[in-house]
Length: 420
Image: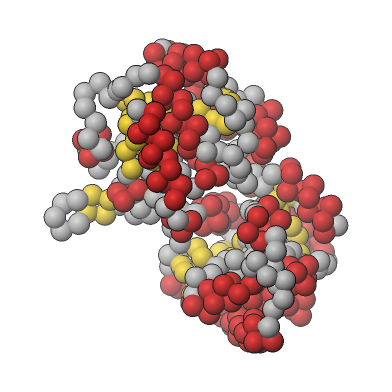
């Protein structure tokens, strides 16, 4: 029986992990005739299947004020409690309106009950589910106990109650094995592991002409080679390892291109990286002001590209992250058949590496062995072709839409079984 699925998050817009993965879930659910609807504070979904509540966005002024007073303190004031409860009550009313408007039969809660970027929304969802007993799936991307900024708070009682809650008709989905174990240990909750995926059964189409001028826009000269870092400039991405790699390769034609800006975590790390690159003699090109969620051309002819426009020009992709909940950029590089230099972060070691991928990898230090391995990739196209095809087929087996479809069918079947 087809379901009417209501997706809930603070935001479904852009290229963040939650927005991307939820769109894939909706696409796969549609193949089984399930129809999706969207609730959030910022949306780029069609208006006729969505409901935008500005107060549900974690950067809305009301939410921002609350967040400014929650973290780094052990005590909350009566005023703060009132503000949280008032916003919770309002958001719960809008959830009722959303479910009624679209006749929702199942909710998919995207990270709202996982990381407390918006505590009132998490409380509202938990209370709504407890009061209505509507079947729901909580899709957890990264828990609050994985982030240092949430370790000291004035809302420990709320975190225990709603992040995530223990409710009989709420199923839990995690994206890596460590999260599955910690959720069981901390909350006593079982969960299903469904990794992030890409449509590996349908390879990307050949590049069109729109991004053909990217090397020129980057100022690359004939003979230059693009080493792509397809991430934001934040400390957990370990971009200093990419700079060290290029220094040790000692090839002035290698240019490190960083696709995204620093974002909302400040510019200090970016300034440190640029200082390091200067000291190490590594040419770093920042391209974050030219990459966005949609292709655009300004009136003066200046193009804004999307990330997929950059991959065809890359000779190597760097992904030396210190920590990842999963690693979408890794899957994307494999999808576009590019060799990847990687730091062996915990989730990669436990969940991804055992599948049999062949990647130049480090353990927090760029040594001679990995430098030789990367140099071979840059100098031997036949070796690269064999390696990227091997990695593509491994990813097709373990991280394709077929894997997601199997997991979602199991979750939906559980709902039908519980309601019989």
